[in-house]
Image (cartoon, rainbow, N blue to C red; front, side, top):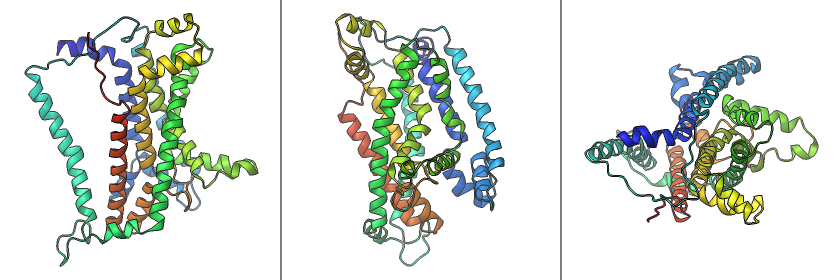
Amino acid sequence: MGVLVRITVPILAPAILASTALGFIRSLESLEIEMVLGIPAGIYVVPTKIWDYLHWEPPLYDRATALCSIFLIFVFFLIWLHRIFLRGKEFTTVSGRSYMVRTFPLGRWRWVTCAFCLVFILVMIILPLATLMMGTFMEFFGNFDTDKVWTAHHWTAVFADPVFLRSLRNTLMLGLAAGIGGTLLYALISYVIVRTRLPGRGAIDILSWLPWALPGVLISLALLWAVLGSGEYVKLIYGTVSILVLAIIIKEMPLGTQIIKAGVLQISNELEEASSAAGATWLAGFRRILLPLLKPTVLAVGIIVFISAARDIPTVIFLATNQSRTLSLLMLDYIADANKEKAAGARRVLVFLIFALLFIGRLLGFRRSSVHS
């Protein structure tokens, strides 16, 4: 416990603080759960109230924009705290010197840790997934008082639906493009912030937080206005997966940039200096030294961005058309039509996609490396 408090937590402070701040902001701007469960019960949060203003006739854009100032206040306060806690501290753990990575015995705390992890997995993962899977095989979701409770026709109907298959293809294209392209962009931005001495890099760091200062519905609306108000060639991307990819990359920039930045802070400059002294170019050092050392972090960010792209609703809701609809938007349509069984089936397919991606991530090296002396 002493090692955890005095060594491990301080070293991981950039990642812990960034994850805490990003998670807090993400909870403030969450929309879909609050929309499905809160609005019917008359319970509103800021994002659902913004959604409500945007769907009035005529839309109350001024009130929706005014509510966004709440997010801006929270974001700037968290940025200030983040910079205060990290100012003047050193977090390098990977340098040119040899080191050893080994497991650390928890002693008597192992049973408490194991019990906590098992309860968390049971309550937060297994029970919701089991309920979701069960609902896909029910004639009426959650209703056990019918003559025929169980059926498989929801699955056959879903996979025979061309709209579902098109939405599945769009989701895969969106997730892969945003995950790969966004992660490379976030890595480059993180490198500029941490490693370079370019003027304005502090402003870039602050600006990288701002996409989460706006709810996804407003980012979607702003991109819609920007595209439709631009030239004829720009308008061509409306209704395509490309504009959805752009929206997701912008939306997830705070998460990707801050997590990769925390990883870059832990890698010593001397590795890149040695590469430069050996005659390697900056691009070669970035590609052959920094990215391989950041591989677990980069893969984690790519997977998170893929998952976010696959399940995101507010950021793409104004940008998608019938031809570019994703599984999440299709699921929302099913819920609006009171077809919860098909919605549960669509959500289950998303879960399968996520687990398949995690398995591929492990094959590519998304696991704890071990170095023995």
